[in-house]
Image 1 (cartoon, rainbow, N blue to C red):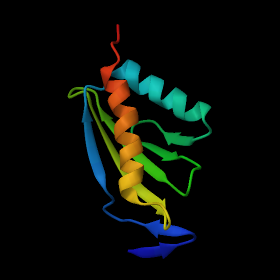
Image 2 (image 1 turned 45 degrees about the vertical axis):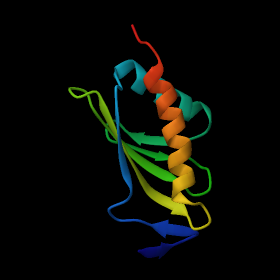
Image 3 (image 1 turned 135 degrees about the vertical axis):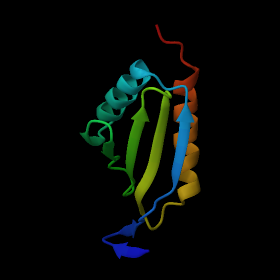
Length: 101
C-alpha cells in the first residue's frame, strides 16, 4: 500500500460484482450520484469521486451479463472499507430490486 495525501491508494482494490443491472439502472445511478455532488468521469468504465471522506470508486458495466463491477480505488485512512461496502451494498441492492420497463 502506498500512502497518498489523506488516504491510502489501493492498487488491486477491493472489488464487488452486482447482477441484475440494466441500462436504465445505470443511467439512474449516474444521475443520482451526480445530483449528490459526486464527480463522475469516463463512460464505462466510470471513475467516481464521491467527494465524501476521500472515497473514490471505479465502476464498469457488462451490458450482456447485466453485471456492474465496482472497486474502491481510494479511501480516507479513517474510513473502514467495510463501512463503504455496507453503504454501497445497500444502495445497489435497492436499485437491483427496482422494476424497469
